[in-house]
Image (cartoon, rainbow, N blue to C red):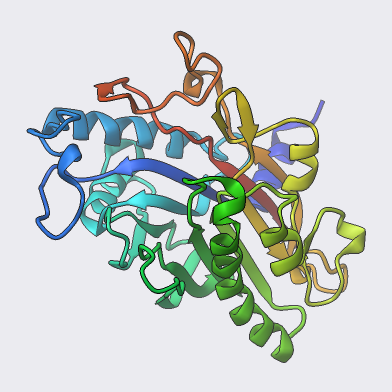
Length: 329
């Protein structure tokens, strides 16, 4: 058995980064310019202040648990999706289960008609923000606008990293019919990454999000060019640790009894290079603890969601979060 001292030393040198789709994390205020009516006290979901506070408590339970067994500080940062605004993220960060971490957050108001955007929560002790911007995903004329990509630059334990938080267009209307939209969304992050890599092929880049595609889809294997084996990642290339998870039948969200692994964190060659070991990739995890799994009903075995239909289910999200771990040398 490892001694307590060795375990603590390993925790001290482990850095964790996560992604979590927070599933319709709205405030309770109706916005006449957005399609958020159902998530109001008088809306279809009876989304009252009490329900909102319970939703925050449930999300804080998950977020405070993530990486807690492998790191001293928990998550260094976590990308989030399906968030209405910065106010709800502020309320989440101030929850007693998270307040001691001192987390800060970044989010921009995007063009999505449902007012759900991507954000980033981060521990300022571990990650120093340098810059952030919202990258627009182009859509065909007449199509609904989709979520922007949140692009954040900062220093993670002193190393400059480039983080892209995504929520690509859904498969509503069919996977094949909507495939091109996700490929376009993938190209937004990839264009910036290509520019970065042209200057420094070992730059630290992270593409994370609810991609609404699995690790074997073209948007990831061809547009991003992410590969499933570390040994096959070329200089300036991208590595997708979730491909092996998916091949084993593991997923983060389920639909009609079929698992998908939409929630991915893809990393650049710089995290793998043995010649540059300041932050070295260690392992990945689908965070699916027992309390987060539905125990009854039609969704038994699925992630325990917030609502079943329009009835509050006292759950967390219809997605499991994901984590990647790095070793700091």
